[in-house]
Image (cartoon, one colour):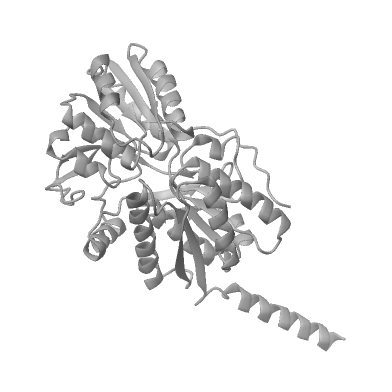
Length: 410
């Protein structure tokens, strides 16, 4: 009996040791579900290539020993198509999903995974959200299986209005946003925070445009011009921002733009030299960051002749890699436990995945469109111009409270 107990103990230790490093050499399939067709196809294509390149770089020397394989799926920016793409991904053995464009598709993934994971113990799937920034996703609608890598709308507006409150030239602000959850939240938080920090500022317009449907923003620009605004705040992204900026330049609109996504595909080309010093962007970084991201941005440009501006796709793979190493497994249920509250080194400093709502806490920058050169040599879309950091905020400055009542699996 004693010998049998020793044998059982030895076997358990052997199994445990084997399981501890079972992920080394393992290929982890990661689904990317976002638009590859329609007006936002160029944006989606850039982000897919950015994720694929990030995987190639991490695969060279991953902390966990895993290899990431990216499986792209086009959701056409539709919640229904997203659900179908998610089913296809899971049928292919995917246990980790990346998505970022639109809160509608984000909610579709969250709802589907809540049901799937509850019914399929041992086959759980984790969702890494790299760009869908509706605050509700980590507040009233928060999910244990959802981890957000980008700063949410309220966090970015906290940083943006903190910067704007000290600008005496900001007196009349026009709000123009896409007519869905994110755009409506940008409008709401802009009005609330400006009223609190700069009650003297007048909101002279609050407009919404259909998401990814408008091809000519001239009528919207005419209204901005007529309002007498000196500043415009917009959360528009993709073609909706590029076409807005183009229409503003064509009309000779002389205002300052305060944006969330001025660096994304199409917008830099629309900005050009005419927008120098007039367009600001709030974000978790910029093209000319030293260290890891400088190497990746330069390598990406050399390989695909495009700009890598969605740094959160790298953040997500980096976070997973480090979590795999700490958990000593790639099992999503066990990895999710490690991700909660996890602090790790990223290209933009130490960041923390807040346990209470799964919202990444990170530093934010206010960047201004200027001529590239000196300390900031890398330009956007070969324009000769780039977003230069003018203000840096520590994570606590833009951190906003959460109302999330997280329901964790037993």
